[in-house]
Image (cartoon, rainbow, N blue to C red):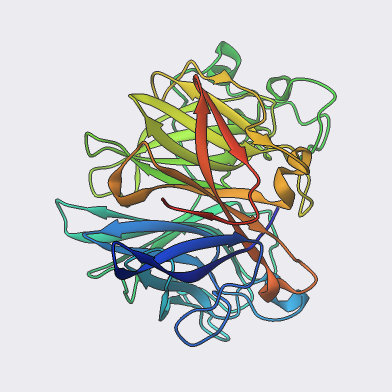
Length: 372
């Protein structure tokens, strides 16, 4: 499920007798960087350090060849969310690599997210990773660190999640570790509850699957990895270790048999929120939203957050991140991608304000809008 577009335009206006630059966002339009080139950071997320924003995303090339990694993860920096400076490839892939830990050209790197660890002073990147020529059967997570937000990032490891661990909300059949392989289950709609197959048991020794993902750093300094697991049928939330580079072994299953993808987590007024999508490949679908008082649940599903024409396909976008502007959790921006698998480099970005009706997040279409 993949990308939309945003363009930010600068409009000069007079305010109190002086020139003031107003930041205008135009969702879906080309968005040039400091070199005049459309920003190339798909499936991305933003890290704020001081007054600088860093945007990390998948670097794409033209055509269908851009659907796998040809360069790696790219980074941009900005002080105003409008003017973005290309900081280059911060996590590269290597052509013809045959040894580990190196990311080989032609692999799949999706949805890179970066958080800062104030104890280790490291910038930590997580991403969904599939080795070259494996498509989506490995369902690994990759982890890399750097000493500065613009890298370069060094790959630490990649692999499956929480091997040998049961979820906090495990069912008795999960503890039995009996996998029922009577029906191959590649994903998509299920004729019955996935627990009848016990996919947790199937992957217990080797580790659980992870595909679409995000990171969330809570107010208390604890970090979480949220990802689609069990052949996309169920979302997992995993507590990371103190370094943010591995798992603590504590995780829970959310939205069992709901086929949630593209998780974007944020916090508002002490509550945890998720904006997500369904599973329809690269094609957009109706957005989903949920809220909980604890990150472990119980999670309450809400209505589709999108309002207006094309709300049934999330304005032809898919969620990738929700950005608190300038650290203010009351000002939130939805970041979505409008994917173009036939010409991956032309994926566009959809950024829109997130407002609320009670506890229901609402994202309305606007042809243009400003932070003011």
